[in-house]
Image 1 (cartoon, rainbow, N blue to C red):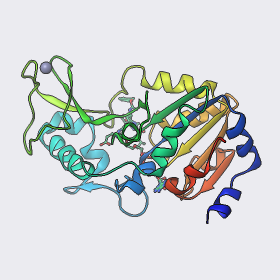
Image 2: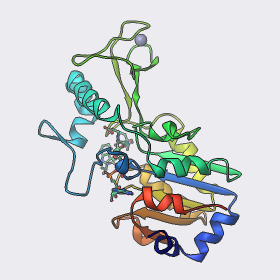
Image 3: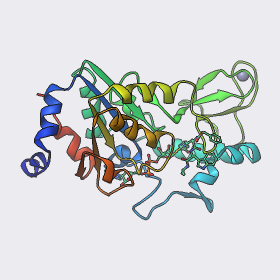
Length: 249
Ligand code: BV8
Ligand code: ZN
């Protein structure tokens, strides 16, 4: 299996992995799929919560209408994630960060599994499910240990209402996150796009920025996406099986 998979990679990519100085990796939910994290789209299992599609319950409008329901949805997901571990895809990406002189990992995921695998300076475009933010004083808190199964938690500092520190649909990205990601994409030689359906903006614009700046763009995904046709190379398959084969040595 390994020999066949390895030969699926082009000579151009093999050479770039050997010689590139500046690499950007953009990940989506697919990179965590083999850890057991449900993806949002595709595979027929589109995430629905109490009859509400994912982009309704995870939206700015729902946060305004029913903050407690949004917390219930995120508590449910934290419950699912709590026992899940990084998979070989997260580990491969973490191993790359010291192998290239400039390396940026940009993720749309909020599960924290890249950090759990050892990745540092992760650019989290959509926030992190293990953090909460205070509406009143803006303080961010780690809620990994926070046990509450209903209602809205209060800020440990000022008593105000907390919200998940996650970017919901219709919300702006964290200040500077997109700018840092776009700057990295503009200067990279190789951009690996792993496990994303490439439909959520502005994250989905990053591979195009990289390509327009002359980077070699590679997609790793078991399925075709709207990005596939504009990639220099598409490696069809699972991230946990393919990424460990993309070695620098
Ligand atoms: C914004 C956190 C500016 C929440 C997420 C109307 C009003 C306002 C904005 C919009 C609007 N209409 C459209 C927009 C823009 C909107 C958008 O892009 N919508 C899309 C759906 C059309 N974007 C926004 O709202 C963004 N903000 O634009 O701000 C603004 C602000 C106000 C007004 C105007 C403009 C904010 C977007 C962030 C939303 N939050 N998540 C939560 O998680 O609850 S996005 C959500 O989708 C997740 O974060 C996820 O990461 C992201 C993208 O999904 P993917 O990661 O790609 O996952 P998906 O399941 O889709 O695909 C998985 C892929 O993996 C598949 O391709 C599959 O084949 C592959 N796969 C499966 N197994 C494997 C695998 N690959 C490899 N290996 C495997 N084993
Ligand atoms: Zn507060």
